[in-house]
Length: 203
Ligand SMILES: Cc1cc2nc3c(=O)[nH]c(=O)nc-3n(C[C@H](O)[C@H](O)[C@H](O)COP(=O)(O)O)c2cc1C
Image (cartoon, rainbow, N blue to C red; front, side, top):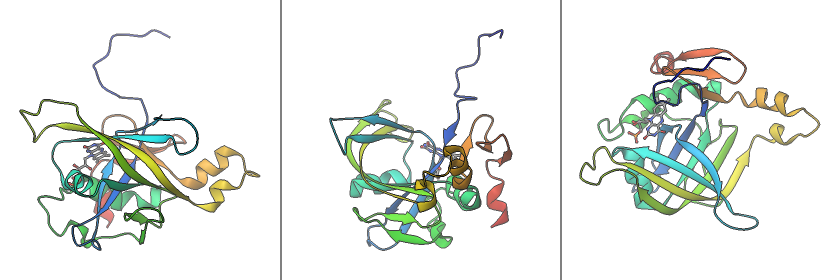
């Protein structure tokens, strides 16, 4: 394999997609945004130490709500959810007050007061334990913020817990979606699904 110097990007490093959910100030109206800067780490010893690193660039409704409530849900995006997820990723919640005129089946979290998505194969209920500004506060509109979160609860499609099935078969059942390069959605089995901004057209 010959390697050449590349542009600085995360191309060909698959990123999994999640819908972050929160309730508006009224405590009942759900809000969702689409995100992929999401990773895992451990922040302590023993059970409950699994933590999530979620980065949000710029000021947006999702960030406003996470700061207000100190919590959010992260719902794995599956292929059937992709049109709605694409819509939540392409429509700015601050600029479009009726963004949530389109909704999945929303369920209240089991551990935290966050909206989770019934159609999502895996939903995490996350409590923010630390917020870190990663870029200059002199340009707050562009600032990237890291939220370090404790996983308070997970709900998962029960078929994915059936260990009599090989992991790869259960991965197929999850129908999880990734984005890899050039604003393209792909699945984990080599199929290109669409460009960003296209799936929402089918809603
Ligand atoms: C595929 C995809 C992935 C995205 N990932 C992120 C991300 O990780 N971080 C981020 O700040 N914005 C990300 N966005 C942009 C947000 O989804 C977008 O700003 C959206 O308007 C957020 O919803 P809100 O405005 O209602 O908060 C992504 C958009 C798309 C289409």
